[in-house]
Length: 183
Image 1 (cartoon, helix red, strand yellow):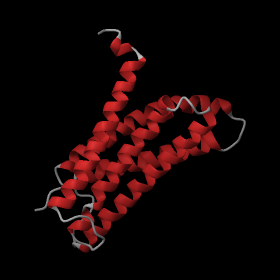
Image 2: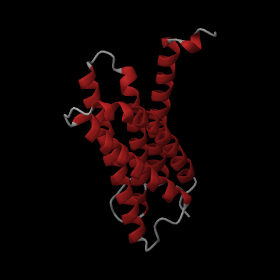
Image 3: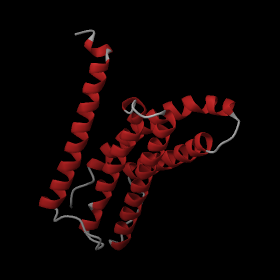
């Protein structure tokens, strides 16, 4: 059993579990909103609010996929994996921003305030961090220049900063899960 936790088999098992539970969470969110909350709509009502958790969950799942791509796509060369990583992260950022826009528009239509919960502040700090990380990574890793010493310094910051952002994402989701039911 000790060898299992140190090998490739354990890694792929954990990747499989993460994929399964990610798809399960997405499926449950969609079913819950469609069956118990009447679905999704862009109407300024609660159905519009339902778009926010959907976008954010998709963003979190894509963030995880983008993070895993370096370990799971060994069949591609390094530049291809970097481009896939950037595209997936761009989609994650775009969905997160769209989810933010949706919730701000929903609050405005309900004449409700914004940024009054821990979830709001954690979520905003997380999205700002992800955007900064995305822009810094794009500038340092994709713009052709000769400053490899800066890349070597920034690479561990980018890598471990992503772990911190993943923790912030999880905190944002957990604090938002309690606010996602109708009053």
